Image 1 (tube, one colour):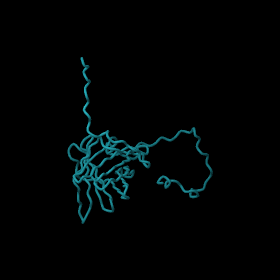
Image 2 (cartoon, one colour):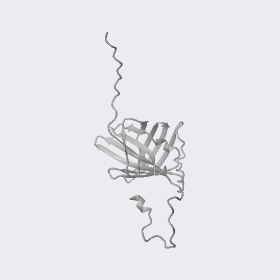
Image 3 (cartoon, rainbow, N blue to C red):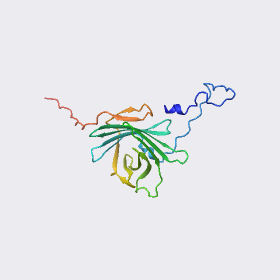
Image 4 (cartoon, rainbow, N blue to C red):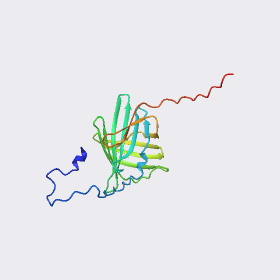
Amino acid sequence: MFGRLLDVPLGAAPSGPETTPPSPTDPVPPVAAAPDFQGVDFLVGGIWRAASEGGMRYEETVARTLNGWFLGSAAVTTSPSGEKTTHGMLGVDSSNQFLLMWGFRSDGAVIELKQVKTPEPSPPGSTSWVLEGTCLGLKARQTLTQTGPNQMNTVTELFVNGEWQATPALPYRRSAAGITTQACPVCGSQSTTGSRPGPARPRRGRRKPRR
């Protein structure tokens, strides 16, 4: 559907002399190099999991898509009232190299954020990215901080009554097992499905032969 918007409508193309279509043997032009994600592509791979004190559980996967030009994500949020799925895309604005992020949730909510530069440096031993935009019709800000190769924290803020109101930092940890994955039909990213792994069973030793 969105790809159709990039096509020139029939009859709208400028008139001119007919050109010979390229031969199937003509060399294909190389694909341009993927943009600089400023290190946020550390998110690619594995399964990110987090749980809040309110009983919310989060699982998310991130994968490169569209020739590496974007990062596609698929997330499942589970609460006592049910489950919601979110598919997202993260790219880079070619005009200023700022990160852009869009999210589309199974209840119709749309999230649109753009990176902002802040004068505050990242905490020692970590790297942070700050994005602002709109979420559920409200001005929103999300700060993502990488605290290790497989660890990150997120802080979400909403601008309410003239001031920013932040939620407690939510720590995520990455693992690579326990959940099966399913490809998103739109962007090709992987979503998490299936049950969580149970406790590992102890391995039994070999029985000694009876005499």
